[in-house]
Image: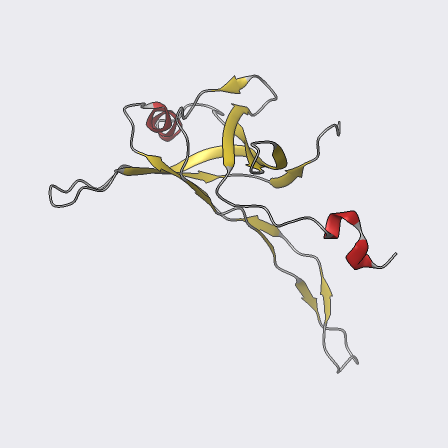
Amino acid sequence: MPARDLPENLLQPLHAFRFHVSFSNANGGDAVDICSGAFAECTGLEATMEPKVIKAGGANYGAAQRPGRVSFATVVLKRGMTTTRDAFKWFQLVAGGAYAYRLSAEIQMQDSAGETVLTWGLDHCMPVKFKASDLSARNNEIGVEELHLAHEGLRLVVEGAG
């Protein structure tokens, strides 16, 4: 069967506007309501591997490329400003020296029916920046707060895998 006829190649692309973010204890505990309210935007689901270049003596036509260290981008979560203070409290705890207050996060992409079709996992998240909305009496835009998360791993969660 040609690759173009495989069932996974016949699927429609996912719409990026339907997603849900949840947090849990980094040691595998229950869900934590750290940021009640929906997020309007999630950016930074990114992993980059820098290859190690090995230049062998006598090999004049290019260097060998080997896998190198992987780094992860900071994930930025944005939502409309609310009176809920959970996101800032978490940032304040970590910035104030709260020992090992790390959370795991799952970002679930959903189809048009609201069913989860893909889940990204972030390991050992730590808030590194909190940004409140700019205040201006001149405009009537909704205030947006941001929570920037550093993490130690990006993974694709496979349902049913142990």
